[in-house]
Length: 237
Image (cartoon, rainbow, N blue to C red; front, side, top):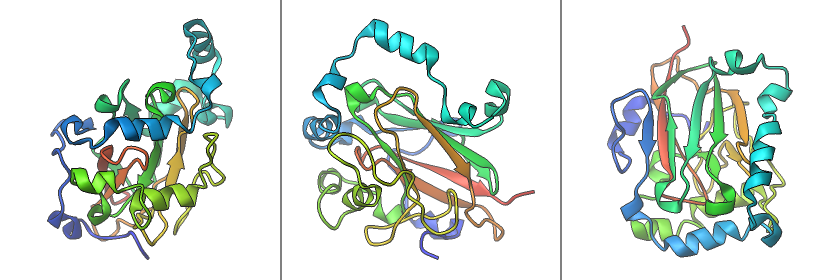
């Protein structure tokens, strides 16, 4: 199945910059972000002009009453969510955008993605499982990522992302149900689009096969090619 590989297969590739050794990882490369103004303009174009006007009082009230999909579907509040491995998208500017989360997760566990960035400031994002060789590593590769034949363009196509900031397909399913399959510019990947709502979140089971031993899932955002991360999937106990 496309997108499944052993840990050894990924030893040939490395992300820039290296991940810290602590529990939480943060990946970002401010100095490597090519054409940042153009990328930001492209992402913000998905949000209508009216939505770009952020009113502090309204935003505060919205955060106070927003209920996450996980809670709406019957999860037992913070107690339950605290047990779910969670990757956060953080950052108040294009330069500070980063993934923050655990270094490992077990096969069969839930993995939750929470967008804590402000889409009205930096645009929406995707959390997309992508084969390590497909991750754009240089400024030139990142600048071309949204061009035809490249991974960012492919992800946007699979999601069916419209100009008004919505997605026809969300999440994108590939291979086995859940977080299981990494993609390439030619093969579909598991992907989720954040949209522009504050603190949007999504979770599903990690079904990537790890019975042969731990291996690495690599991921990125199609709207900010420098926003990349990885997590090691361990065998279920």
